[in-house]
Amino acid sequence: MILNEITKVKIGTKNIKHYLSLGYTLPYEKASKGRLRVKKGLWLEVNTSDIPRGSSALIDVKCELCGKNRKI
Image (cartoon, rainbow, N blue to C red; front, side, top):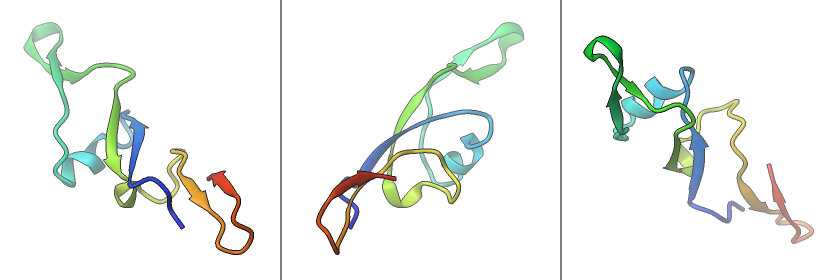
């Protein structure tokens, strides 16, 4: 059973398109030559169900058999 509905994930070049396609808005800043970029080291709060398969984000879960809480 998933305990948290919202999880923080670090935004980087590999997952930015995924979250933009889901409708999340990201704070952009102006870089050199007038280009827009996302600040390095940005963390975003997302729904746990929106985390892609293979992500390294940690999710709090409770085992339905033994009742222990874990992060996976």
